[in-house]
Amino acid sequence: MGDSHITLVPERFAIAPAEQAFMETRMVGWMQKNGWIEKEKSDCVLSSEGGWRFTPSGSLHMTGEPEKRLLTYGFRVEKHAGKGVFTNLEGGLESACCPACGKDVERYFYDMVGEWYEADGFPPVQCPLCGVASDIRAYRLDPLWGFSQIGFEFWNTGPLRPEFVEEFTAMLGEPVRVVWAHL
Ligand SMILES: [Zn+2]
Image: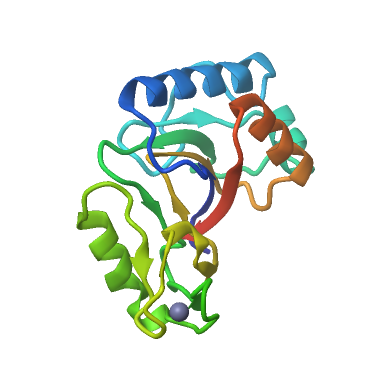
């Protein structure tokens, strides 16, 4: 079975590097204080920077399930200097519906995201079918993607308890999207 991660992605597009670093320190500190992740970084995520391995009590709290005995099983924070797009990776989108006309523009959506990514700022993105430009976050995506400069990754946990996501959101102080990705 392949690896997967859930990323909690703020709704906010732009988060400056200093704020990203502050958010990472605060959220890692909160997870450690609660004993949900280990104190030291280790090779427990698929990233050269490493991450913080989940503890047995962390697993129970976050998912309601016992700890998984996997090598890849930890928390890391993905930070982007430029714009960030958090996709579901393998398999791609099933559908991407325009918030104005409701039509599925999935086959155009990768190009639309590419143009948005290259553009200055965070401009609205025009629907190729009805011509109305909408905020890229307003397109109804299945599976869900996130658009922010920071994302909090949970590797191989399986589904997070909604109560935990609420707690995380409250600590972060802003709404997040729950983005699943399969490698
Ligand atoms: Zn449309």
